[in-house]
Length: 198
Image (cartoon, rainbow, N blue to C red; front, side, top):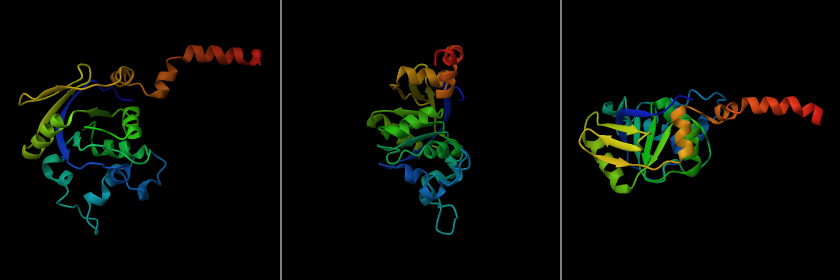
């Protein structure tokens, strides 16, 4: 997993509450067994018109968000099913960070497992980021995981909370397999003693 320490990127707004995982990646696109290829289907029903053409009214299709890496979303983002494809699809769209006032629990953990940072902020802070990302062009936010700090070039600044174990895993680029492999010597020792013991 790629390390996440600090990131500055363009923020894109998705001012909708209760965006569930079926809206993030609809069920008809879950037939792949690879972890790749889902980005083009993210937000499919909003992103495209019936004939497959890009929907000009969907905010994330606007040219000023083409290179966005931070998504500012409404409350209860990622609710619904446990599909891990949702963070995979968002990552392939280019997002590294999702900021919302609340998340679906499983989606939140799936993001962390896949090296994406979900940040929970109070609604007044979300409102500032949402408004700025809507009215400004190439509105940039810096997210510093070490300091647990979000700031912009206009003087906005706020701290966020994150579990210390998850923070350490992201900063060091450790997924569950990497964490297990840190115990490699003990695992090998157990395996070598297992046969004689049983």
